[in-house]
Image 1 (spheres, rainbow, N blue to C red):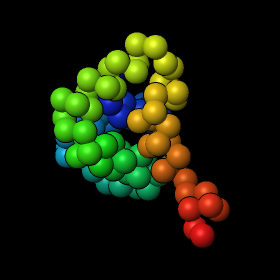
Image 2 (cartoon, rainbow, N blue to C red):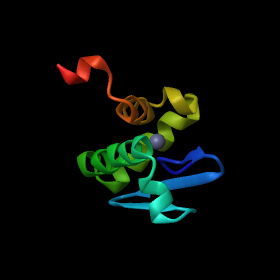
Image 3 (cartoon, rainbow, N blue to C red):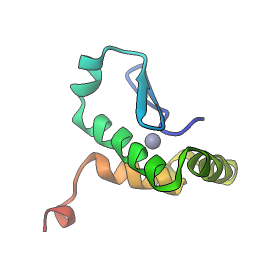
Image 4 (tube, rainbow, N blue to C red):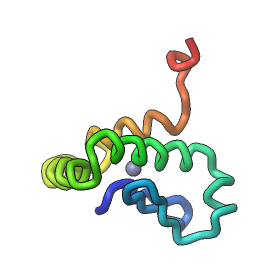
Length: 88
Ligand SMILES: [Zn+2]
């Protein structure tokens, strides 16, 4: 439930402030560039809102929205795979 919890084949990452916690090795994490981009988006969001500000908003949203409808997640998910639009 804490931001950035995302699963990939039984692996999980939780981003807290500038730190990404994973239940796999660093190498396994970095081997999935889309996953790194997702979590780095949360790192930036933490910076933007502050840890408390971010968590307050995130938890508030998560009470009323599904995971992929939370604005912070929408942004992180769209950062996973750059679309054509981002390349222009
Ligand atoms: Zn996320």
